[in-house]
Length: 152
Image (cartoon, rainbow, N blue to C red; front, side, top):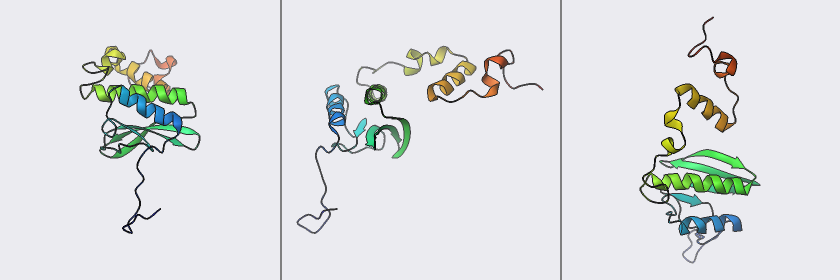
């Protein structure tokens, strides 16, 4: 920590993110997203309102998180910047859209991604697949003829 002229802590302002994240920050601003309100790029101006989609570099991994009332929830961790960038822009876009602006304003993510036309079983399977988790035995193809709970 450094000290300012008054003896208090020196607050660093400005751009302290890696170049690719600084460019991503600029891209979000160009798209009309609000820094600190809808998105946060660690090391860039804007802070957080407590309800943002954020990205940071942690070692060699890009970490994308969702912040809800100031509580972070990790959404994705990857070493692939292109994957992180695409995921981050999609999440920020839908987040801004739910607030009435950006390319997703007025659109329903659940409808567009097909969630509302699925059965509860299909939604559960898709959820597990999108997280890369193994399906529980009750959802495996072998148990498809037994909807609901298994009867033994």
